[in-house]
Image (cartoon, rainbow, N blue to C red; front, side, top):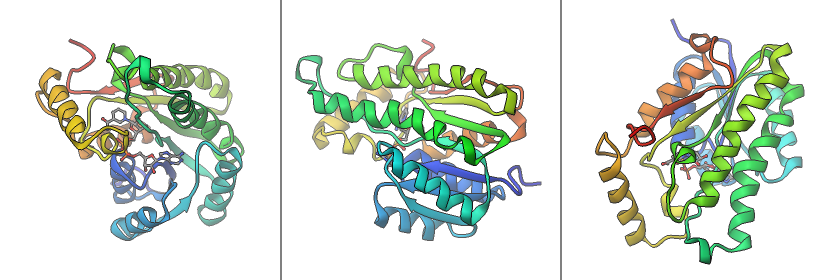
Amino acid sequence: MKKLENKVAVVTGGNSGIGLAAAKLYVAQGAKVAITGRNKTTIDAAVNDIGGDIIGIVSDVSDLGSITKSYEQITETFGKIDVLVVNAGVFIGAPLADFTEEMFDTTSDINFKGAFFSVQKALPFLNDGASVIITSSAVSNKAMATASAYAATKAAVTSLARGFSAELADRQIRVNVLSPGPIETPIFGRSGMSAEQVDGMKAYMADIVPAKRLGNVEEIAEGYLYLASDDSKYMIGGDLVLDGGYSRF
Ligand code: NAD
């Protein structure tokens, strides 16, 4: 029995990394899935790769009008949304002294403001009883040099999941976060760091994580399936931590 039969799911940032793996698993579990992202070429490639009941929409979560338009297009095609994965995010790493206002605004506009309005603008398009999942990070509970602004945006969305759950309880809409640890995805390569710095960071993370390796997107996708399905119906405003032990030791 498939776990998401007859469900409509939306995954922001579904054209790469963690979001792409979650979208793939959702389709395999019977959902109709819409992925959004900023890059049409990678969205089209992801849609072709996954196949089945999936559409791709170009949308920028830091642009409120674009968020609303994407929900209008998705619901015209599939109907109202049962599962919303607010996953689009960026990592910009730099020492505190070098962190520019532009770096701060980009991090905040996409990871925090983008998450807030991805949920707010979805409200008219969500079915009662929907599951909303926001991608946080295990680093929100840790101290990590060069990642202060990033970690703070992730702590912010963990808080949003609690507040939103309280606000949406009357519609039985559950809002939870999933907090991955260090996962092998293209995110670090897009961070402005050199290839050498990215390799160094990954090696450092693999060393300090009790699992002694980075996680892979397939094992994280299982968490998104749990939060999307009725298996997690007693989980509200919570935090599913899948981090190889990173934040607990
Ligand atoms: P990724 O770079 O592969 O994917 C990020 C996705 O977000 C891409 O699809 C990109 O198109 C999309 N995106 C970025 N800015 C956007 C915008 N303005 N509008 C719409 N889409 C936008 O990285 P990933 O590792 O798969 O990251 C997914 C989420 O997981 C992010 O929120 C990230 O912060 C979080 N996360 C990642 C890790 C990790 O180690 N990889 C750990 C913890 C949390």
